[in-house]
Length: 104
Length: 171
Image 1 (tube, each protein chain N blue to C red):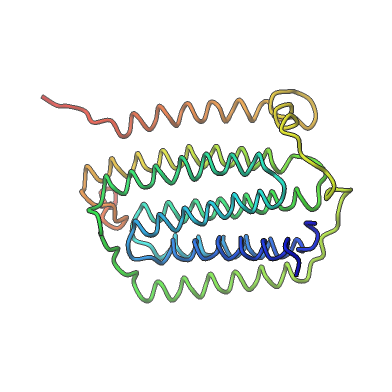
Image 2 (spheres, each protein chain N blue to C red):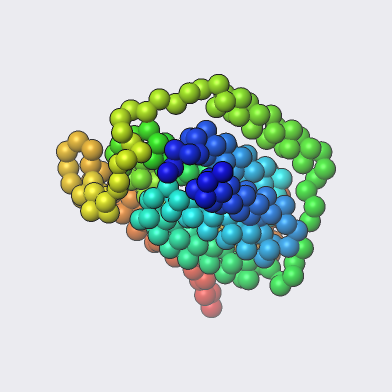
């Protein structure tokens, strides 16, 4: 059964996933790969919610929260990609350091 | 080691391997495929925890929706076989140190904390009908207002996407 794997191992997995996503978000210089890192971070949070729900809480609140997070992540990805494509049309690049029109 | 444990470690290595490749691959299309592997691994983890419904939602929305959207946008903005430039060395070193320190900190915290159960959670099985009832009823333990708010958010995001990405013809 599931109690053969302790809860902390799943939490280690989600922590590692979160910091891998944070690493990618801070080092990549390409907006699409930065968006992919954000998806990894959101998924690590979802793993946490579902694991706590499975091991500690005899109810389905964590699952409902995960459903809401998935819906919001889908909306966020769609808007981000619309912005990226619009920016690509304007400056012909998706490097975030090239998008400096508001800087000066 | 039982089969249950072996499956968990296979799924965990699939998730972490895919995620590592997704943030370090130099070809952007390979990074997208590695992200796909990682997300399928997360769906498998939900399945492993006996939440079949949430595994199906993860597969449909992330694997079938977001990754396809990302691949479309890669083809709209890159030449095939485009190589991403290397990250700045000093920034990479600082980021790696910071992320590693953060991981070590959380790891040591989790190691020292013992999680107490609040009831017989391990024998609780989720029915999909419970999810539907919780989403569409009022009262304690139900989520009608957040459900409506998310519906409105999705509509607003859809309209916003069209407005942002539409090409306006000027004569």
